[in-house]
Image (cartoon, rainbow, N blue to C red; front, side):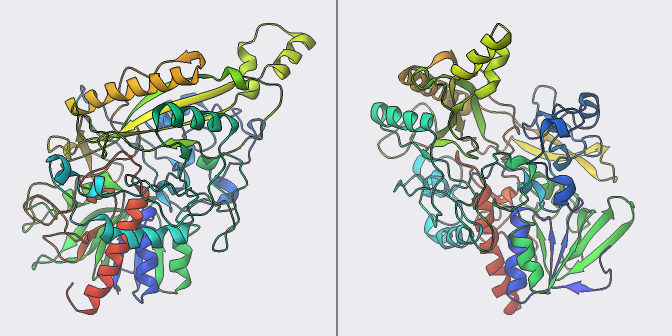
Length: 563
């Protein structure tokens, strides 16, 4: 438990991508910081399984299906939640939420020191003014309260510290950054690049990922085991317990308390935050922690739940909700998935080296300059991978004995996959609220999530399917599987953003340009809840950049006595 009488300079709720960066920046600039994390610490020797073989696991990697169905019926729907890595995901029975029957939502959560940074896909993309000034381009909703030029230095700082491997492409819709050498494309991906760039004029590149291709800041380069979602003993990809939290700890001004489930922010009669109320995850003991500044970085929906639950006579609808905007404008990317086939020209008995933890990326072109599509607003991008199937194909080959084994060795197919990811528009009627009838294992009101994709997303998906099919045709794939007809379930992509958005107008937003709550000047929200638009790119790098920017502001405003 935290020291209940000590008043820290700042208190941070959450230890993931955002919280880790805020802690690093504040402590390195002289502030004493307390961090509360709802989950336990992870021990690599016990919890990391990236080098485990199926025969070392009790269920050979398939997991105890009865236990997964009983305890993680939602979490197991994530590709990374299996026998190897289910420990990185919550118990759904302890963490309930609700939604209307006709609007299903997948809430994938990781509660531990490090949050979801152990099992994220590591895609690290900068947003551009196509995202930050989207409303100025198409007239829909609001711009972010800053431009790309203002956030660019913070992208630089984050990339330079964590290490992002990528190629510089000179594209306005996907700004270049401070990159390590890119990972190599596979033979199949080189073929994809050649065909797509020639026939469509779209750039194909190695994905931009927070995996190290060379030693960086004391961490060794990736060893290409290609199981990043299971943890990494060498810390060769970014996660906060290996990168930002140690930096904070080295200052001697950082205190981390795990297994501390924050329920709400505690405010005084003047409307300022005094700290937070929290409950011991295991002990169920209630306690308070005090600080001059509270930074909520518990991940989008959890941060918003804390704000909504922070009710008092002064804030009857929650902290930051005087505008009625808190909880609204929920976004999550939608994907058109499942497309792929075999590249006949690469079928071979010769084995290609395996283990690349990233594939290829085709950046957004729809509704960028010179590529206007009047059927929908905003745009989408593509990604995929190409590699030999090796022994996976043996299960479908008829026969047995030595002749069959020889056939398996000599006829290794080469498979290519392709999916598209589109931007979800921010809409007021996509929202979350507290469910008065449902509580979690600690008695905290659960969220009721009411979100669905609209006409714009469904129209965009038609264009996405058309482009995916056209590219597969151009690649002349065999045994082709077409793209899915349905959109992914809301929440499936684990990129939920919005619900406490930033803005210059307090009547239309929850936070100001520095992630500061309009209504309570010593409370900040620095994770994806702050997003105004989402673009079609993964949000994590931008979450880290706005966290550093907010931390800089906190330090300067504190020195001036403005908080």
